[in-house]
Length: 216
Image 1 (cartoon, rainbow, N blue to C red):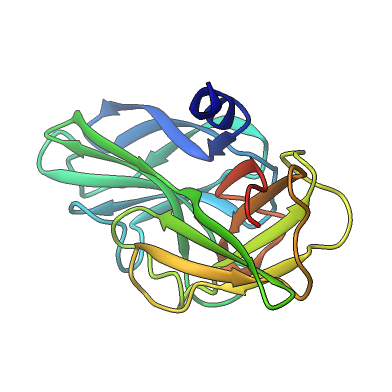
Image 2: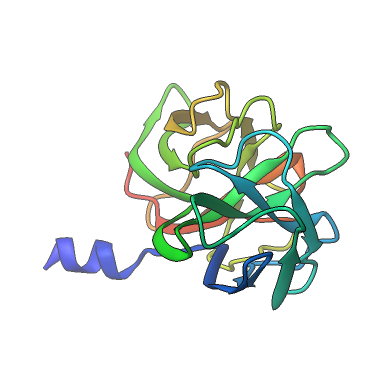
């Protein structure tokens, strides 16, 4: 019973790319759905299995959801692997990759989205220590892209007010774990939400996870 309650009390979500279709040899159409609208968000396409280097085409993706068409002369999207990605560049010079879809020979192969989850919670010496496991698409470089994880009170997906704590992702590993340390202990049984914010942009959210604090 307690396991069911704990699972039921958590909610997670991710910005994603879907419905990717090759509409001609030089054009790909893709839909996206974001957690928040951001002026820094775009959709790009890269040759290969990862969103690395400069995209060969790019389109604005600044709404909560929408559809874009990427057209590039000189490429055949029915041949070879291509990666379509939702990206944020908050004037940092480095793209943060939030979600991707890989096409091979014009057909869907796989998709990846940013996720995060709290795997351990404890109070110690007047502070709270939260272990957060995160995963971002292949090719994302969290530290270079200035990705951060934020902690808020409450369970709203886009919480109001000041964050309780924020921590940069310290490596360029596209997946791993970090520890958030708060200045004062969290309250047992209260609701909290963590966000993965790409490109140090609090207006863009790659993923969120709500939970009740169970630490002692």
